Length: 419
Image 1: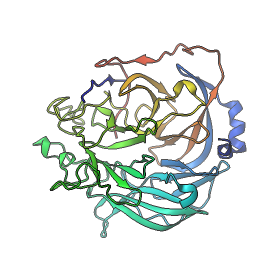
Image 2 (image 1 turned 90 degrees about the vertical axis):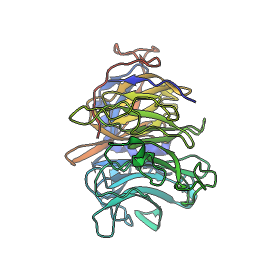
Image 3 (image 1 turned 180 degrees about the vertical axis):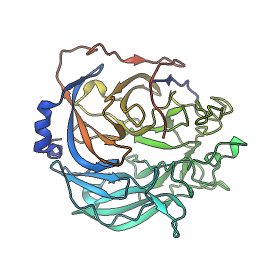
């Protein structure tokens, strides 16, 4: 079913994570206003270097991937001085390195943690996206097993994708980027449109790496059976809605045209045949158009780009008026974007956390607070924070800021770029 897109330019145990230092900062942190909630930004931990993914474990521990290759543990607001051992060697450079991290839904009993990373070839000249799982305990990863080596090898250092999401039914979804293959010539022949490669795809596996028999391209000649959807560019946000079964994705466009997509079985999302972006530097056209029969349009587009990275679906009670919203981190414009969802449509967009730093990941914690990982281009140590609500009078709009509504086909302003 085709639908119109919108375009914008513009638990108690978790209290351990906060720590005494962060508690002291709570009294000092200024109140920030949004259309639906006031909140404070509270530092959870400092000293992480280019964090890429964060994951919460039962008992209050937080795992953080650093793109340079280290998996770090945080307890009681303190960063363990020694990285977790047992992590595979990564190809760190450009956009590659140690990337996403998620625990298995049954972690409390099986201790399994999943990691994505840029895997180097034997001679180190090339790299691809790979997924491993291992049993985590006491700062060590053991019984490490590779469950995917993507057929997306490149000598470049970009567009690895790498986000992970479980669906609650034993399936693991994985995003693989298009590896920056140039979009020229016959666009329908681009690897993102080719089912014989993993470039520009969302994959679906069992939690042990086996291919589900009901994947859409199982048994199709010339098609890789892991593929769930295709025609993506570089998806760095992915979240599964357990209540509705929907899979939401945010992906980088080129210069303009970042997208929110509702990912469905066997669908083609168009890159690079259709889209809203243009070539870097020259501004030359890339696409044959913005829509085409047989290709799914996005539910929301950002022009200019915001470089979305990290995606959460808010289901907690700490911010009741945000419940059901998508929270998208952004590198461009240094912002957290809240998107109100009505069925299959984005109806409102609001910019939060502007000017605090590039946001690489956003997650809802088991305590219902919103956690955000910042990164610095320089590679210097930075912080992970959480948003805590501040009570206020019962009103829809605070500080003169109102939610922006986007009817189908509408446009509004936002700043940013892609990466």
